[in-house]
Length: 123
Ligand SMILES: [Zn+2]
Image 1 (tube, rainbow, N blue to C red):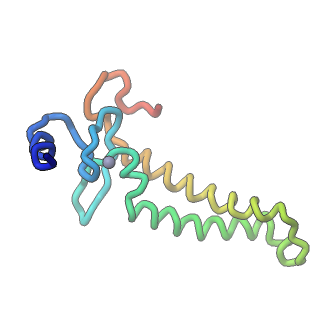
Image 2: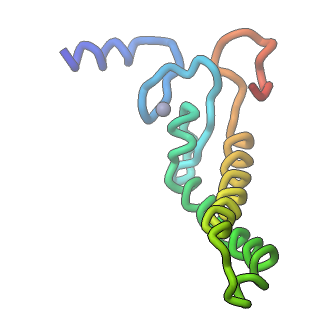
Image 3: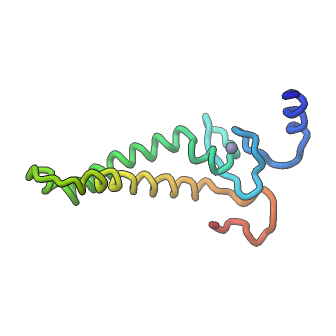
């Protein structure tokens, strides 16, 4: 049952994500694991632990700086309104998103297969 399925995946020439074994039809993302590169699908690249940790650290540093610049005077005065309840988390989300998108675009390789016209294009 399960062994026949996994043995058929071994003999296929179709490129697969090295984590979830899904087909890499649209794009391949290269992540580094202990100095070795590994091909991943977008979902597995986005949930790659070191990438998430690095984005989170950037989010903490840059997000705190942005909150201090934009809302610091309001917070220090002590008259923070409920609007800050959504502004502050959104301020932290921006550097996390920018760091993650930058890392993902840098790790994207040409599509494993498919038409040459879409190679390297951002879709
Ligand atoms: Zn995957």
